[in-house]
Length: 165
Image (cartoon, rainbow, N blue to C red; front, side):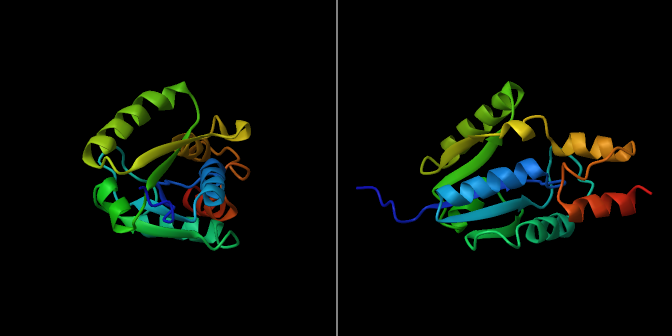
């Protein structure tokens, strides 16, 4: 018989930077799972980060400070499945914005399933108002002087203003 009492999920990402779309997925996951661990990837082999790992963690902690008490932000630098097992997670929660996200996420879900058959990958569809939103898009808008205040938490918008004067 399956034990359904542990409903810990991991929401992994680089969060470089965290966007309102990320926060929407994390908040919605916190309504579905008993505990949500927001796993911040320390360094990604796929992309260079604009913000340090500590800044990214601080952005998330600041942005989620008034939320439900079942969300924790944790930095990690291991395989995602090992990190999830360390926290006793049963699920990995990811957001999907568009069909373009699907191919990569499908490959990662299958790989993670091979490595850890006990972990389920759960996808939450982006809310319509965030379906276009990506960290890379936000960084590009900010670098060219565009307004990002309604795309990212205030703490991130302030940091962009400092960095890109």
